Structures are given as structure tokens and as C-alpha cells.
Image (cartoon, rainbow, N blue to C red; front, side, top):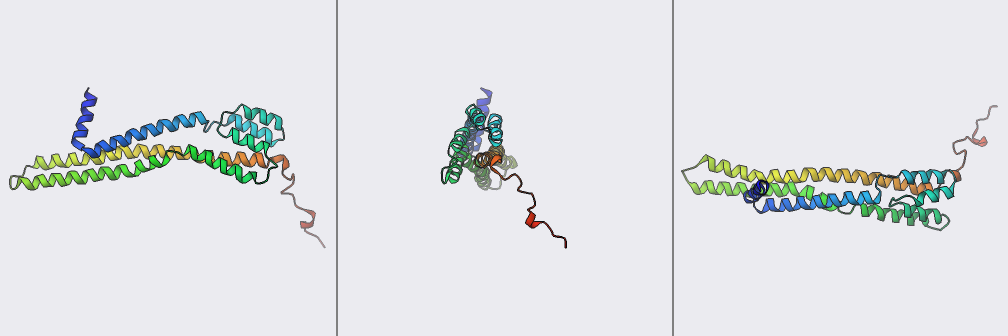
Length: 221
């Protein structure tokens, strides 16, 4: 009950601004838990089996690559399986890039909400502080000549409470968003490399791309 009493006391002191910030913090927690679950289910960052399939494909062992790919639980496995079966289809490169972008966009769902909370929470806290300061100085003016310094001090610390709550909500939200964005950025790089590996395996590349051609060799008179 002491924790609830403290929470209700903060809500009573901070007013509706603190209530809104607490709602935003609950939304942030919900989105964070959902993204952690989504990343775990999709296999984000866990591509050991997928990498083994790509290595086999790159060396020309297509049956082993397809068999290993079937064991992967990564969200990229169906896309790469489609790429392996559609190598000769015209325009498959652009189609696969679009589908990979759509899959990655699904991983980024909810980022806009977290970004909004990280930007709005400090401003909302500052707004509550300004309102509190206005109320404190209005009370000071109403007191006339009998000014009580404790009245002004009390009004100021209550007003600053909303800024503190706003920063307390914004800082962890910003850190969570940065971590999630870094993981999806790595996923984007891996997805692009995986598609390029399937579409242009090492076995199909010229063996001596860096070798100097006879025509380019310098002649000695």
C-alpha cells in the first residue's frame, strides 16, 4: 500500500500532466515487451543455421543448403527459400528486395511510438513545470505583503516534479529505441548480404576477376 500511496501522492501533486506521463510510460513498457517477444519469435540476431545454409549455397552444395534452410526458424528463411527456387525468374531481384523491406518494416513497427514518447515526454514535463510556476507566482501575488517563502518554495518543487517525471520517462525510452534500431540495422545488412549470396553465389562469379589480362600487360620494347 505504501507504493500505491506514493503513486497517488505524485499524481495528486503533479496533476494531469504526471498522469499523462505515467500512461506514456505504460505504453512504452508494453511496446518494449512486445518488441522483445517479436524479436525472439522472429529469430532476430540468431542466424547460425541460416549462415550455414548460405555457406553451403555459396560453395555450390544446393541440396545441403536447402535442407539446412528448412531447419531455420528465422523470418528470413521463407524469403531465401523463395530466392533459391526463383533464380531464373525475370525481375526477381527487385521483388525480393521489396519483400525483405516489408519484413524489416514489420520489425520496426512501434518505433514511431517510442520516438514520439522520447521527444514529447520532456516537453510535456516542461509544460507542467511552467503551469506549476504560474500557479506558484499567482499564489504569491494573492498573498500580498504577507509573503511566506515556504509557499513559493513548495510551489516551485511541485512544479519541477513534472519535469523530473518527463525526463524519467524519456531517457529510458530513448535508450530502448536506440537499442532496437541498432538491431534492425544489423538485420537489414544481414538480409541484404543473404539475398546477394543466394542470387549471386561465389560459384557463379569469375574465378580471376582480379587477374591482369594479357592485353593490359605492359610491353617491353
